[in-house]
Length: 87
Image 1 (cartoon, helix red, strand yellow):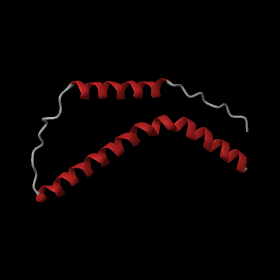
Image 2 (image 1 turned 90 degrees about the vertical axis):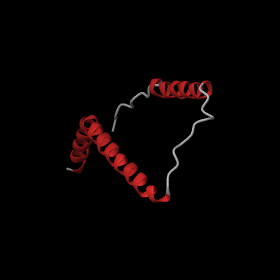
Image 3 (image 1 turned 90 degrees about the horizontal axis):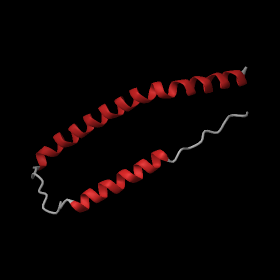
């Protein structure tokens, strides 16, 4: 099996590193020590958790909808190689 190894480009890792540095500098520059949060009661915890759960479900479905077409060509090639080896 002589598959080409894909080269990993350092640009995405570098972009994440730059983003983290920028966020850190913004946090240090902005004085966030006096940030006050709205108090909540124990009865509101269920509504907060349920809303976060709904957001997580929508995010998971949207990521799956975006990644399925991206992975489809490689998946089809891999599937055909497996079928060829099994026959």
